[in-house]
Length: 271
Image (cartoon, rainbow, N blue to C red; front, side, top):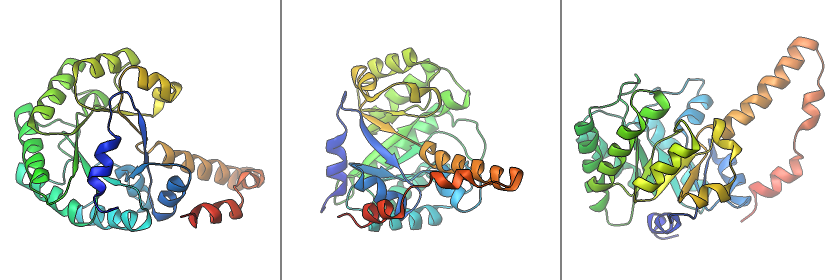
């Protein structure tokens, strides 16, 4: 794949609702690719879990880049980096993060509008300037690169749907290629968002949004379905429940539910 950005961009079609499968190491990336993922992405939360840390600004840019490079080397599908707030407040830092992400082979990155490690959103004007600088850096690259702009205020309950839509519209005007506001209050709110934002919209399939199937997302115009840390949390649920049984009741029935190593081996070695 000579231009992962171009291949990644081609997947972003309104109403297509392709699944961007978030992974957390080379093995999970290769399994997801073998099972049919057309693209994979890192997850800041899932990555942080592997390092024994909570989510929310606990990763450094160098750690995220090294992690992403390992994923890129493991698969032949496009890889997006979940790069939190771009690892800095100022627009120039966001631009530099884009350039560094392209150097490690990423097809694109996602930048959010939260001033980590807190939950407060950047002022709208600054949030727009950050995306404009990142988009300018992306367009100056020698190959294609997909920039996703995230408005996290709905998920963090720091602003309302009207503000989220206004931010996404402004991010699109500033040059963002994909627009993303995780977990609106209702599916009706997500439908409104997809109607009022004309660019490709990413929806997060987590929590209450797991109740809807891919067809439902396609019907409202969603272009991309990401998993965030949802799949990683499924694996952590398995660890939690098995450990609770072992160290609580002293029984091991949960361990009998594991997948056969032969199946895993076949997926890891599938070309």
